[in-house]
Length: 118
Image 1 (cartoon, rainbow, N blue to C red):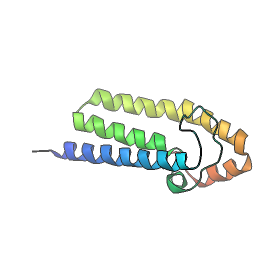
Image 2: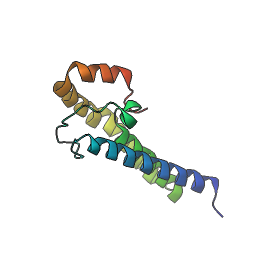
Image 3: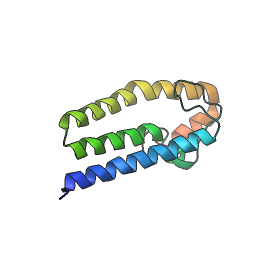
């Protein structure tokens, strides 16, 4: 019989994976490369990107936390939280600077209107 942590973990894992799939599809359909280090061709500010500036990272974090709960692994949960901190402090600011350079005021307006995570 599944416990609350199992069900919660499974729900988070499924929600995070579904959110990532939606965001990846939405990003790719805009003509942008999925590789985060490659320059985007278009600023995407609709779909999941209207709710989070980095929905792929958000989905990965939620799915990772769900997997950690499902496995009952405090170590994995710590690794997921550590990855979120590194992303928030190092990776995402660098991505946002590149987007700012590429899209100027359009990106500035978007960043003011949409939170980094959710």
